[in-house]
Image (cartoon, rainbow over all chains, first blue to last red; front, side):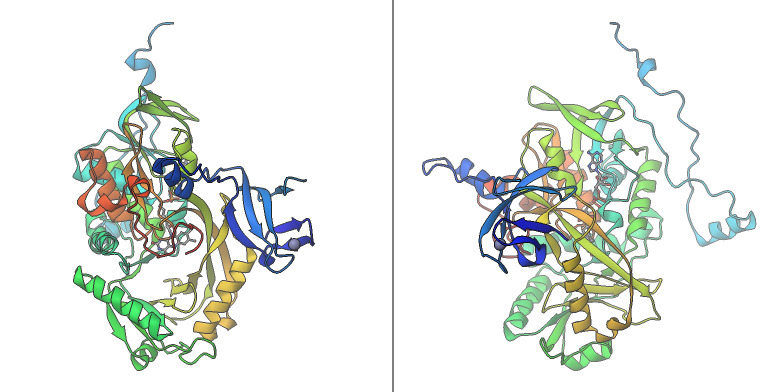
Length: 83
Length: 436
Ligand SMILES: Cc1cc2nc3c(=O)[nH]c(=O)nc-3n(C[C@H](O)[C@H](O)[C@H](O)COP(=O)(O)OP(=O)(O)OC[C@H]3O[C@@H](n4cnc5c(N)ncnc54)[C@H](O)[C@@H]3O)c2cc1C
Ligand SMILES: [Zn+2]
């Protein structure tokens, strides 16, 4: 079970949150080619290590948080860029 | 520096290996007479040679099956399977062992039904008891809409020659007396069943393919982790491993949950995220359930093992992970679903729980494909359904390696489908790998 330190509500159980996936994904420029858009929609770095990801605090402050979490140890080191 | 001679790189005489010979009832009797002291190892523990025609990364079900079919059906025996730990301890040894071809898209039904046909003849093919048990897979439905969707699926299955029958409430109750037809929240309206579906002894699948591959000359190299993929001029030349460089004409990724990690070694990004799926086993009880049962109002499946334990699982943990464990709320959710379907399960204690890391693709369908580096192919993206696919996955991947092009049953599983806008949206959820 993850314990996610919400900057607004304090440390809460994972069950209060909804996972939103890779937060490092950036939408390409409007005139980018289809290959860039295909990569944006489908491809992920999926690192075995630190991962920047979205968590929505659904049962709390209802804010989207940008969490950096390790995908092997599950340690969380920053939320919204702060330790 | 002088060039190494062939003698330097060939390991000193390989340890003597006696073929296991054929397994049979007569053999069992004969070995019993000598107190079972003369059985030999089922496969040869090989040391890496400096070069192979084909190197397969990953000694799971798909890697071993690919090696088996390459050596026994496609005439390519200069093959190594390279596994970072012992073979069979990845997902092939961690899954809930359900086999079926109850898919939605016709191309997937055809592929998975081919796999079922290979399962049906597997024990004769491998001369190995994999305990293939076609006890039937039963899916409950709880709403009119769900019945219509399942009817559509059943018809699609029948159209391509797979089997699927509808069960009304009375038939369901007589098949599974313990089922709670009128549970308060999700009353059951009926069910569909694939009689040819069932379970298989998962470890035996790894062992059987390993034995068949090894007997045909394949080197199975354990405790050897691939750490890099070497290329020259856009062509793969081999793999860096914890036991040195191993040259290869073709390199095949069959690393399941680690597909992205290993593909990145060749500079390739995949449409995959790694997620954990858990499995649970209860204490052993007398015969209670003799089919595989799936709960249509949630995501839950259960069967009873031959030892008597109830084996069950549910949804993935829903956040990226490479850790082979599971989160607790999913365990609670899975247990609650089980009790809604079979209330008597509430009396049982869970004995064991574990997790496996799976490569969830963006459309929920697997990838058997050439990769954008010449000589590099992959078998992966199995999501949580790749056990049932092992015979067909191995066979069609061997075909891809031997012929350089996809087997007709897997042309829809190529990697280019994502960029070219022809994804196989099996779950119908769009590009969210954790949503199904
Ligand atoms: C809990 C659970 C339940 C499941 N239930 C079912 C089910 O009921 N029915 C079904 O059809 N499917 C099921 N699945 C899915 C199925 O188990 C997998 O899709 C399938 O086993 C994956 O293919 P594999 O057997 O080749 O993988 P694996 O056995 O995981 O093989 C991959 C191998 O690659 C090795 N490897 C990884 N990286 C490297 C490296 N760098 N160098 C060398 N080796 C490496 C790993 O150690 C591993 O042994 C389930 C999965 C899980 C986790
Ligand atoms: Zn909050």
